Figure (cartoon, rainbow, N blue to C red):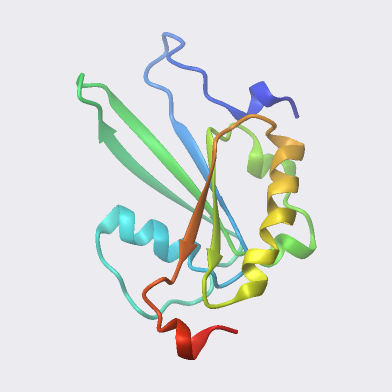
Length: 142
């Protein structure tokens, strides 16, 4: 997949482009909770693990009045052991790599996630999110 296939370039005259943001990280790092908090400004402490893929869509209006749809693609995380399918990366505009500050291994696995991301999307922006910073680290780091 070329870098151009991983990015929405701009308005092609057919309407405003959608932006696709993919989330990557180990299972149970809080990818779904991160998006839920952003989308709905709420937090529910309990959640079942994401199964396969969940798509969240947020509609925004830019300061100049344009409507933009942003899609957040959230995966289960277990796919780290069986590479993600190339279609997950197709059309991605950006990536958020998420790790759990209470689980050191989730930070150590970021290099693998980043390497795989760059195999499919060489140039899209990638952001790092340290999640669960509100947890008591002295008692809970594993």
